[in-house]
Length: 329
Ligand code: UDP
Image (cartoon, rainbow, N blue to C red):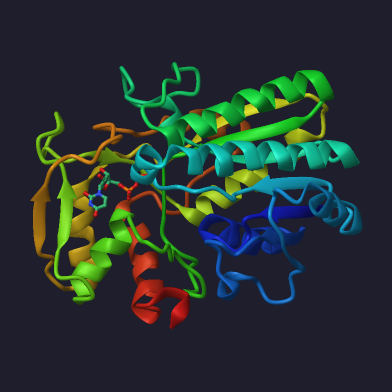
C-alpha cells in the first residue's frame, strides 16, 4: 500500500518507515522537521516538508502520491511541558490532527492509524490496563490524544473513516542495526537521560518521586520496543478495509518496570555507574501504568520481539553509544 507517514522523521515514525519497507509497502514521509530529523529519513523514500496547517498542501501530497492510508505520529510528547504549556498541545496535537483529517476526507482517503497513548487513562483504578477501562487523563498531553480518539469515532460514523488508535505505553529502544534511534531536544525521557548520566554527558540523573505506592517507591512504566510498536500498526492494515471500522489497542509488554530498575538496566548495559539524585514527583505522572495487550495479540497476532527492559535498553545503547549527540553526530 501507499502509506503517508506523518511525522516520519520523528522517533517512532522513522522506525515505522523501515518496518513498512520491510513489509513491502511504499511509505511516503511528511514532516515539518520541527522535532523530526533529516538524518532519520530512510534513503530513497519520498519526503515532503510540510505543516499540517497547510491543508491544501497536504491534500496535494495525498493525491500526487496516491496515498491509501495515513499513519499519524506527529505530536508533541512531553507530559510535563503539556502541564505548563497546554495551548502548545491543544494546537499541535488536537487541532493539527483535525486539519490532517479534514485534508484526508477532502480527497477521499479514509484509512487512518493514530498514535494514541496510555496517558488517556489517567491514574487507573486497577492494573493492568485493558482498552475498555475508563479514560480520564490527568495531563493535557493525554487529554489532547483522547480528544482525537473521540473525533475519530465521530468521523467513522459520519464519513466511514476506518481507523486504528494505538495506545502506546513507553516507547523505547532503537533499530536493531543501530542506524536510527531516539533523539529529542530537549530530552526528557528516562532512558536517554540515564545514558547521558552513565557516559558523563550529564553529571547525574534525577529520579522524580521515590515515595510512590510501588515496591521501590518509584513509578512503574511499561517499556515497549519501537519496532514492536511499528509491527502492530502494520498488522492492523487489513482490518481497515471495511469502512467505518473503529479499533483501539493497548501496546505494551505488560511488564511493569520501575524507574530504579531502568537505572540498573542502563548501568548493566553500559557497565558504568549512574549518580542518582532523588527529586520531588513530576506533575502529571501517574504512579503505575502497564498494559494488558491481549486484544492486540488476539486480533492482530501481535507478539513482541523484545519482552524485557534489558533487551530494549541494549538496542537503545547500540544507537546511543554510536551517536552520543543523536543525529548531530
Ligand atoms: N523520569 C525520571 N527522571 C527523568 C525523566 C523521567 O525519574 O529525568 C521518570 C518520570 O517521572 C516517569 C518515568 O521516568 O516516572 C518515565 O518518564 P518518561 O518521561 O521517560 O516517559 P513518560 O512516562 O512521561 O511518557
